[in-house]
Image (cartoon, rainbow, N blue to C red; front, side, top):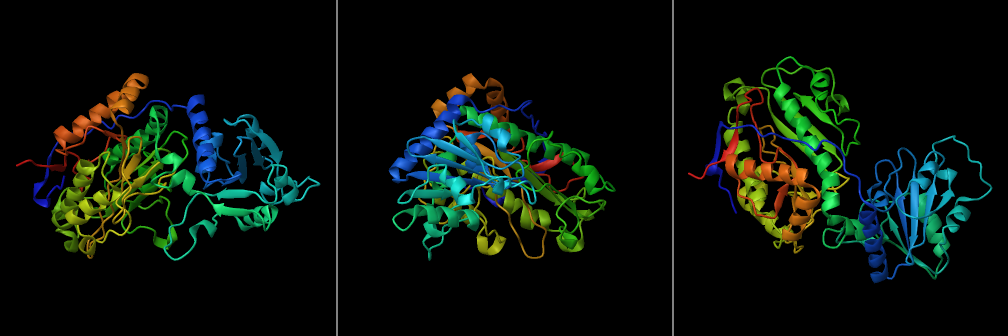
Length: 467
């Protein structure tokens, strides 16, 4: 459903509860076994003898999908064969995690994966250690890092994002009669990647992060005042020790001066632009606006910010939420956003949304002419970022889950507290914000659709009017 700019109103409205999950939900043994089974089936279909799944501190999602953990500061590799046999190759300080892994696997100590100058007490070369994982000449293997490539001009299966020192060894081991290819697509491709559909257990696992990220943003919005420092305000973005998916942003005025992205001791001033972002595993929430009560407190060039930027942006946001549902294509979403706020005018350049998982951006079906159909179990982040010349930007990202009747019933039975939160969020979006939702849209965040452009006015926000 296309929402028109003229339907967007700025008014006094009830605030969202932004209720968050109280505790994390672990993935079950059944879920982890399903992960293993799904990837083995993909391997058989692709005629792969093995997968060589690489991980480091920043890029461990595909590895963790099968092992249940990611390396904290070292590198690690999982080798899994088509017959299900698995080997974990771990450095000095990850070695103990071999006994905690959620996949049955032999453990091979590879000190080459350890931090610089740590003990390298092994009589084996790197190739000899990797050979112990069962990789042989003539095999066809897939190397999995964290991303797939989508160039129209290159053979994307021959572009590798894992480190050269490993790709080179595996290529040499499979020899001229074997082959290695980039097979990250088996995990993250928007059409068939195994990580792009979740079950009820995974939804609950990720809703903890998504809902708590939103709660952090709501706390911060409630505490914004003139004269508070970025550091002080960033204290409200406290995720309780949970791992972050992106760099936390709490920035007043001009961002990234001196190339610094983290919060500093800079104090808010009346009329400042302000940005806030926190991403946890399962979801990211962010908001932008001005340290002001209304347009009279904005810098002169920004006086029309609400009318020229925020209201059109909100129309696109509401269009995104009211259009998305199972059965349509990613191209349908792209076209709906383009018709609401043309890219040529509003300067959005990235995909208008993407899959979210342990990573903030897994992959995306939302691109021009995409024929990828949206299905039950897909988790998405509404991610439209506009850039109108002469004005500050607008951004309000949050996540949703698409769930058919069967998945909704499973969530309601297995995770009734989460189901209750999702129903409250739906009611707030439809009744208070006026955003129509398909019955298969379950908000993962308590802030979906909630925008305060003037951050010192904590009673007013945007909504869709039916008049």
